[in-house]
Image (cartoon, rainbow, N blue to C red; front, side, top):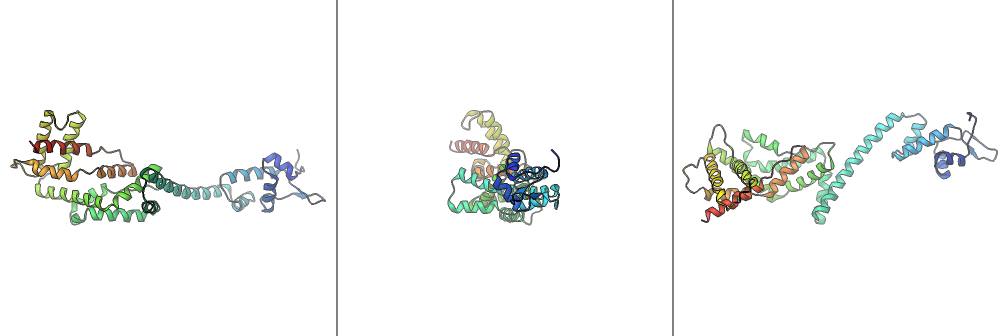
Amino acid sequence: MDGSTLYSIGELARRTGLTVKTIRFYSDRGIVVPADRTPAGYRRYGPDAVARLTLVRTLRALGLGLDMIRQVVNRELTLGDVAEQHAAALEVQIATLRLQRAVLATVARSRPTPEEIERMHQLAQLSRTERRRLIDGFLDTVFAELDSSPGHAAPRRSMTPELPDNATDEQVEAWVELAELSLDPDFRDHVRSAVATHAADLSESGSAPPRPDVVAIVRDLATAAVQSGITPESPQADPVVKALTAGCARTLGRLDDTEPHRWLLPRLEAANDPRRDRYVHLLAVINGWPAPDRLTPALDWSVTALRIRAAR
């Protein structure tokens, strides 16, 4: 078929799979221009119209607007430039959709009130600067009593989420939940109290080099007992409890204390909050860190074991 071949709109429709109405619309917009007209005024198109319309159909399927498509087919813009611009625009749309999906997934899972849904939506829309400001507010509260202490910078960093620009759906959902948790006044008070207690323990012990804190000792010893299937009330738990109380007494400089249960039990009860495990888990998801071990099982075991022995 030579270059002088002309097609009617109906023939173009059959060759491209587009409707006559769509081709006429594209023609009116200057995207595909008639090469000639019949004496009766009917449009006739050259062979290049088939390739143009095929390209137009592909670009439309990719979501490009007609004005941009017209500039591409008329070579006012290169296809590479248009693809780059459109890909950037899609990244913004994808990020927005991920945020919306995270909110909806959280809503479906937790059945919040309308007010809570609105707050979650607002949290998902925060910019990087706004997210940082929110977390700084939480950490300022948590470390309020340690601002003058040179040693609080590292723990503060270890509790700081950094949502990446290319966050996965799981990371976005984790951010929304963690932000909600960080705004909970009761949770803030709990974490602040735990941090203050830990700082006081270090101050009282005056140990150099620093020794493991009470919760770390409990975590290591009780976790091993839990994993070994030792129940808190069994005789096999006695040496674990003895080692646990001795380690905590040594850390806090209470070696002469003959009733460690009296001060250790309330300390562990105050530290035993499942929300802490949840925060640490969400933090790991957001920051791409390895999944942490849960602290709650070890604390539950230790609290139960101490209560039983204190009652004897």
